Image (cartoon, rainbow, N blue to C red; front, side, top):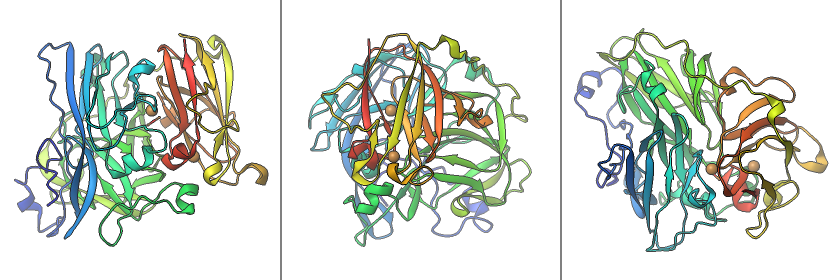
Length: 467
Ligand code: C2O
Ligand code: CU
Ligand code: CU
């Protein structure tokens, strides 16, 4: 086994009930879903939180008999869950033991530029970076990952990523499934390509640069084709598309409907019933799937475009709320008239020549100047392949740091119900124009970029300064 079980790496689930279910849905050799542990808060003060993360080299046995070299935080692959409350004063000691420079960025977190962990916050080998910030935003499922210029794709691909969860009083009052690992289950979905030696080969072909690196193997929390036992009841899943490039279309193998209750930056106003969910690189969704009609031992699979890649096996145990709350949180009515201006971002090009507003990333150039506390409309469009005209080319997930957006419209139409919540990553189809609104309450230098990591690394990124 991959050795990821120790040192705060990934923990397998208790196997107590697995015996009972084995004859039904779980076959010999099936792997239980690893559940990333919650990172210990080293500060006893309830309003303060202090964490230690070590970026390190590791190895995993994803394929039997083959050892894959990996990167991980506090373990061999991926990282523990940082869990904080709104209002907490947080500090994180991040030690780099990778033998090469990296950074760590809190994706979706509203903090000042100097704590954001972008490409200017390089952590040299054998040094420690210690950002400090206060949690000012609502309950949400965020994540963290490296952001070194030209290296983000490779570092994330090798395993550097973890979840960052925020709780608040409102979310705690809601009767939602909230037993971590039991009926509140994180799913970090990533596609990988393992070579004949079982290694993550990250040498990009032209095709990879073009489309972003896409692998033929889907992993969830670092396991291929895992199963997870779920209670007979309503179960919450926190999905992160932690892939370098792939856009998923998730559904259940039996066509069962589920509810989306949260977007990138928090809970929705009300649950949205759906039978499939598109999630692009870096987007998150909180879902509730109802297993109360299942018999003990029955199972259903999670699929991407019809291809199953993990299995939910229902245990006999009943747990959690009987009903899903019909009202979740308040999302403010957006008043466009408070925006001080509209700013345009045009994504175009292909291959290594992907650009935003015709430019590629330059660390020494500030592309946009913003005023602190201003509200702005960002009009994000995808030109497709430029000269070949609209509707050709590929979709790009646009991400802005340091704030959360509300989508005003897509090509002039109101966003679908499951996008009427806080977003930090917005998928824009070729030929499409999306308008989103945000308030910039944190000062400093921030990035906006395509979250296809091979596009970001090729230069599909710019910098905005808030002061
Ligand atoms: Cu998820 Cu600029 O990053
Ligand atoms: Cu980010
Ligand atoms: Cu892109």
